[in-house]
Length: 135
View 1: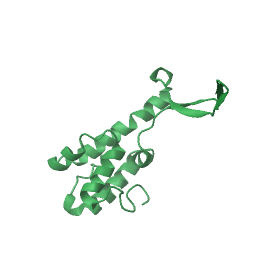
View 2 (view 1 turned 120 degrees about the vertical axis):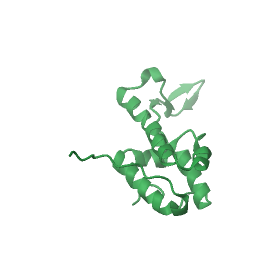
View 3 (view 1 turned 120 degrees about the horizontal axis):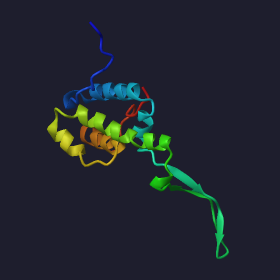
View 4 (view 1 turned 180 degrees about the vertical axis):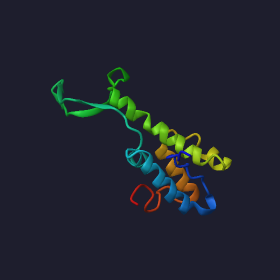
């Protein structure tokens, strides 16, 4: 008999939110080491630096702007879909709680979902300590 190496996504449990939160954070961390940063900082957006320039005698300092999709490197494309993967993990964990799933379904990033869950379950827009991956 062959063992499966897959671990099930922890099912959301509002009554035991702190336990679920700890489990889902461990799951996320184990699933991909880049997920914690995405959960905390938001989705990866490829950027490029625009060098300093002078326009009509005014100096415009160097700054970063989002890249045009035609400029994306393959590695950047791969990083961009990680937020979608993380959103799916969170939605899958909420499958049994239709009300909670409905509350986060309109969020456009995993970070926004996470903040909305904290607001609904912890009563604060600023998630409590250990909300991200400081475990």
